[in-house]
Image 1 (cartoon, one colour):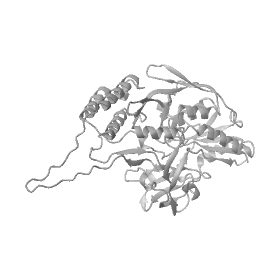
Image 2: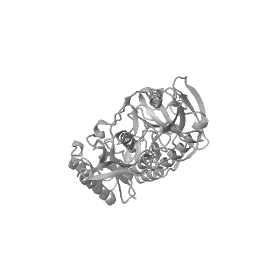
Image 3: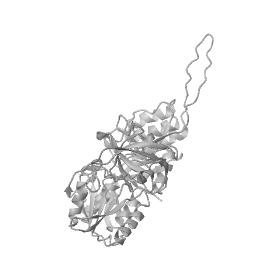
Image 4: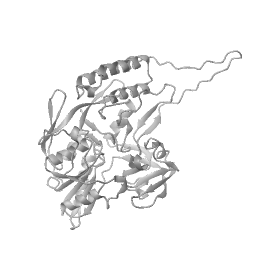
Length: 460
């Protein structure tokens, strides 16, 4: 079955990893790593990425001569016919199918010639996958990416809701301007949850080392390790002093959770709160249904807050499953470079009154891709009030293309057009809130967050 994705500059991945997953981001390097360096593969984890050596550096023993110094050995890489075929197919797909026929102003022919020569000169498998991702990054759309076979396997496990790694069980996002990593959510029964860590808490250091590197990226290796090993983290809850905690790493498995709770307005109304960190996990619609039933068990809800401020997007099937709980019918369409239309519609499913429940959706700069689209659709349908700050505008739909070696490309193929306001271009403008309220995730708690407080007032 074909699956379409909208991938943001962040969490797809998400059930395993940090809000900014570099495997979904264009590479920042202009050249592949030298062949003599130990290659690495990116795997989503507690933090931004988990770099796993795919093979050791080869050991070369030199016996010096009595007369001549031994020459430095080199490793020659012969061009692979399969790599050349994959490159040619990938380059052609972009030429013929890419959403923007002007390739965002870049010379795709020249880029093809450059990377064709690099492939023909010979690349290790890891350097080849890196080069293909770099080539797509030259399109500057912040969406199109190339995945190695191992990353494809991780992606499939992610979509199936099969988290499996060893860590402390947090979804965390880098905050480089304040040199911290802020927790988006904790996994149920994880070491982090059992230690009392919660959303909005900040990790400052691990075993005496800063959680961010000099470039502002999360230091993944600090939180990961073998089962039953200990680590000391310095954490700080907004408004409180830093404190040190000793945690024990344990295997983390299961789906990406959908945290929920019931809040009370100043007038005593019961309002549900749901945090949607991703739409990349196929279990999310069912989790939302279960949360709605549970929150209504003690009494009917008077409203619901959907917090999309950390929503990194995901699959169209997951987005439809979520939207079906709150609206129905044709909601808009996707259009490609040939102006062909493909309708986006859902069949409604009323769970505990969800079809008519008053809604507030929270958005911000970290609301991307299908996170943006579902927010914009609920606004376009006059189904929800949006509160927060504008999104960045990243709503291209990606189509997947699988290759003979198990690798995969996600290529921007379509953009979304809302049915009631087709003149709006969300890719350019982002989603605009109905009520502009600002807050930094890492500087507030659930009870002090101005955006949530403003949302509660809407229901009174």
